[in-house]
Length: 127
Image (cartoon, rainbow, N blue to C red; front, top):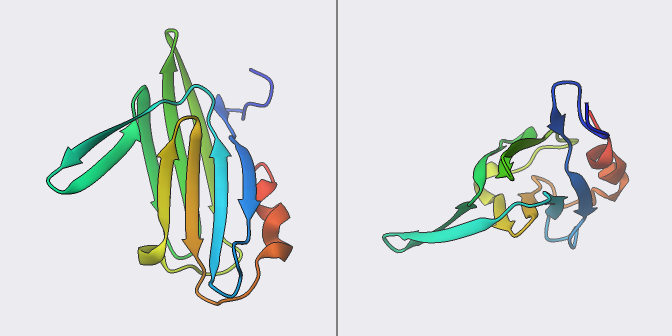
């Protein structure tokens, strides 16, 4: 098993969190995914950004977030997984994610406009 990996061969991503202006109600989770490349394309008038050298599955519901990124690099497959129950509810339709080179950025719209600063360590714990 590789250092830092979970028992089933998945790797938890490196995490940074930010309680963006609590009065506006947003919280950001930034995950570092080594060697992840992204590509963009157009579907009608909508720009689609996805993992170029693998695949992603990202789900945000009112009680939890789930991110699974599978990367193909040099003939090897690496799977990064992050699943967390949220400390408080969010509004899924107002949440978003962005993919950038080696990065997944989740922006969560909290149901209540309060600080999640006290919950920061919750998001950093490895499950």
